[in-house]
Image 1 (cartoon, rainbow, N blue to C red):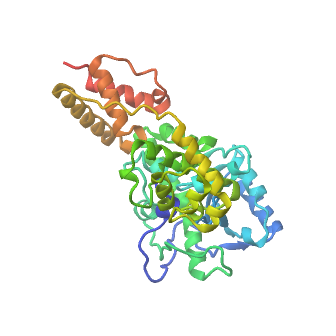
Image 2: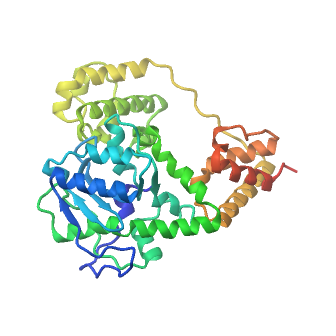
Image 3: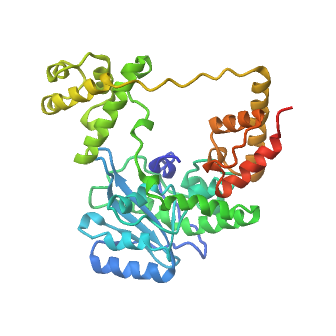
Length: 397
């Protein structure tokens, strides 16, 4: 899925247009909630409504965990902005997010829902993510909310805000309008998506995929999946890459423990420099450039221990290179074309069903006559489509 801020943002323009006139859209200004009693009243209303649109604005550049700065909530009859920075306790909100009897509508909602899991609470329940649902309606893998509002609802939207200081008060008129529009149209967007999903027969599949938001594993960070923001990583030897891998894990654990940005502790260029040097002692760490002096002085011994241990470990076996015959390559190419056609036919974004590597693996298994239907990816809605994919490509001839 696309990053939360990218999924909501598009190029800026100058002034907000009028709110779309529609029975399902509230044109009123949002209620601003900065005290517990008003929040309690809003949440009771949302509970009685049975469903609500939900979004947050947050900042996370300087901390490990994003800081929730604003919460937006909309029902068919109320639109509100909740200010957590006014010492409003959000635990009652998190309880409502966990309530499986209440439907929550979000867009690219992982960072909005993550605070619930972070607090060791039961995970969110009964969530409908419009970005996930749109991937079953021909909109691609990571469509923005602005695109859905424009194309499904036809609403004119005001200026987007790529960068905004959501922790500053008071909020500007533009900030309030932007934040309100993120939930103002979500209920109507969901209605349009459910209609399309019902017509195409993919509603159950979309709901199953939205249910992944109920799994705590969905919210686990993947430090090794982040692209390095420094040159040189591609030139490392296998041993140096192993050291870098261990240093990334060390940095992640430290950042989580201190609630600091991982790259704010040690930048990627610093980790790469450490991986390239023969570090044995804290003095070797002190001599390494691009690592903050404060970190080197405080944690030089710990860093040296990580590197020494990584240097002593047995390297994992390198992945085996596949050498395909001409017949195998042609079979994989045909299978890939069949896969793409099947996804296009069903209106499902290809990455939602399988990666290109998975398609290749399944194609090669079919070529050699192996059975893969018992593997985990063949569960639920994916299993139905993947079995159809294998039926269409057939055995090798």
